[in-house]
Image (cartoon, rainbow, N blue to C red; front, top):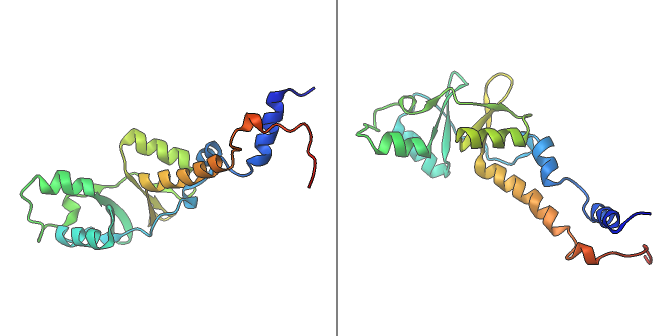
Length: 175
């Protein structure tokens, strides 16, 4: 004879179709996460031009390339820690002197949990996503991941009955 806990679990499963947060972490890929197209510039671009482009596009980072391949990443943190604190000639200095060269990258089929874990452990705020040829196709930010998981979590919360332990029905009657 099934007990009350089994009934509640079955009812919750019926009321709660679709992916949950744990499943999304383990099985969803970075290709599922919405992120704007990356801002990509050549590594020889001046610091001034890069910062102006970041401002006008409202972006926190820029992917820098050489011959179409990812060479580095330049972020707001780099502006603060490497540029603002030093007397840098931003008009004439190339950004490659201040970028993080050869940044850690992931393929689009990497799972969300792996990316989130890597970002937390390494202190990254952005991870470039590259294709099989090493060309940047996307940048995943911590914000993108939190918003993605927040949408799933919100769906989980919105589909829970208000008081699941009170919603026990002895039989399924009616329409």
